[in-house]
Image 1 (tube, rainbow, N blue to C red):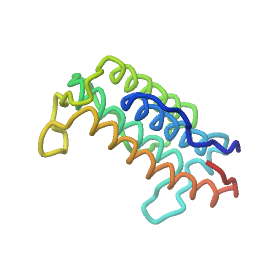
Image 2: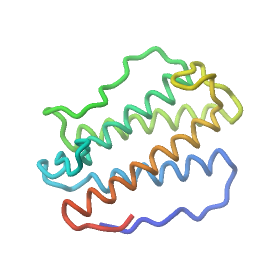
Image 3: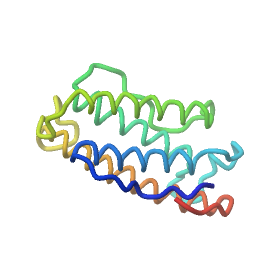
Length: 159
């Protein structure tokens, strides 16, 4: 497994947030890729979390925060729970599609102070800056979980 390094690039705030978010997103995908299906869906913790379940959850979070909450689009939210029909290709493909949609939305809005169209779970509509920072935090937490799960499954380490 390649050891992915922190991006060393000086750029504007919005681009920096997306750069780090993309780095974390790809780190999760790398950790969840290349395993036999029984390993990718194997839960090693009491909560039932598996690598593919983490990716599916992150797909849901991407859609909730960018197109639904921030952009205010009318859409059906994806399922967040893993089911028997899910494969690495389908789960990672859906995550990549959600990431592309999220990045398009961010690219369309240069004002980081712009507020979300919806409140979602927040007490008030949050700013695009807040959404980006929250998604870095959310994705980073789960990238750490993915690191541990992958090491438990097959001994692979690295970021």
